[in-house]
Length: 120
Image 1 (cartoon, one colour):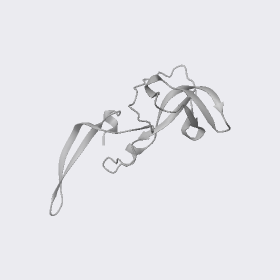
Image 2 (cartoon, helix red, strand yellow):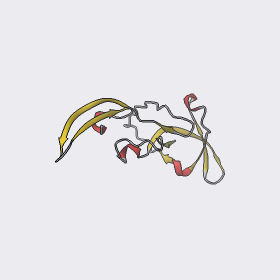
Image 3 (tube, one colour):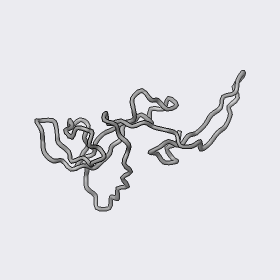
Image 4 (cartoon, helix red, strand yellow):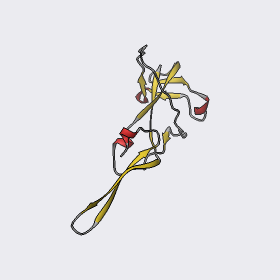
């Protein structure tokens, strides 16, 4: 069993934060067979039928089985390049910061596929 590395859509930067562009893993998926020296064929769900099922080892992460580990798998809407787009759900907090000559509106947004603690 392995996890598959995916990331948000490249070029979409949310408030200049790198943590929103950090890589995420989905899975675990079963390894069907080894293809060559550095590639593996995975058993992907029907939702990912448009994605080729052979992946390089650099985008796979080993899944260490733990009986107490309970997985809450919420499927992401991935495109064919294994990326997804972050969209704001709602504004959690809002305030205005006053500088010397102008006022800047600051907002804290809750994003799709993230919890309240990960709001930016």
